[in-house]
Length: 77
View 1 (cartoon, rainbow, N blue to C red):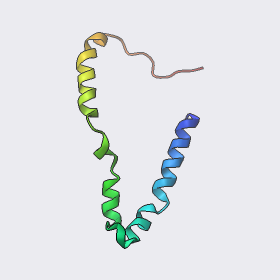
View 2 (view 1 turned 180 degrees about the vertical axis):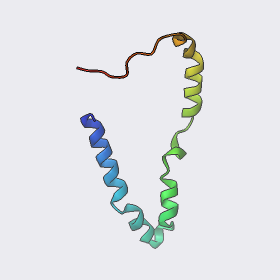
View 3 (view 1 turned 60 degrees about the vertical axis):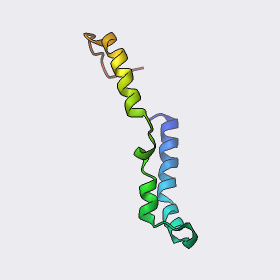
């Protein structure tokens, strides 16, 4: 795994496992339960038009690679 991927993965793991949602839920003024906060943190809620953009891209460029042979999936240096 490249270094940047490890860093991002490690950072996001620390964020989600640090108990922040429990701390926020414990604050009466915050007004949400831990479950409600977790539901709001669902990444799929924030992807916008990504599915439509991918479909449009594939529809536009798929003809260019039709009939092309698949290359090896391994890269060795």
